[in-house]
Amino acid sequence: MVKQVLQATASGEQHGLINTLTNNVPFDDFKSFSPEHRTQLQKEKKEDSRVVKVEYLNSRGRHERLTKPYCKYAGDPIHVYHLIPGKTYELPLGFVKEVNDAQDKLVKRAGLMEVDGKEVKRDGSPLDQDEKADWLHKLVPAGF
Image (cartoon, rainbow, N blue to C red):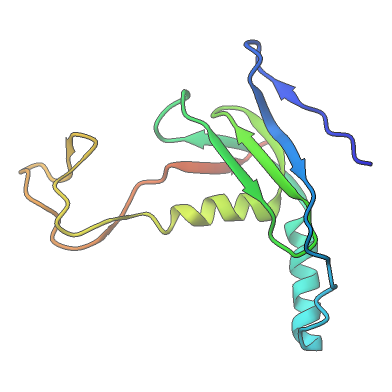
């Protein structure tokens, strides 16, 4: 049985790892993969489970939150994380990669004129082509 220590703010808001759910999918140790892929996946799983110390940042401000479940491999428990901007957490590297990589997929579409009431271009004209959008969530290394 794994004990889970909950973090809470002065107002009582829980953050960090807030819940762990069991996974009904059994872990098969990558038996259906070829031997070279199996060893590669085992290395990736070991690397993704490594715990790193990071700080959570949100481009919209300190009032925003990120609540996200994480389960990358079959048989792993489902961890639910609730992150508050400016706080430092010890998280699995796979979760950090997942959050940061999702930011690379954000796009401002062609024809867009404004975002949240702010004009995209100074002259007020729409975008000519797709552009990479600004980040929303970011996990940065903290305390080397």
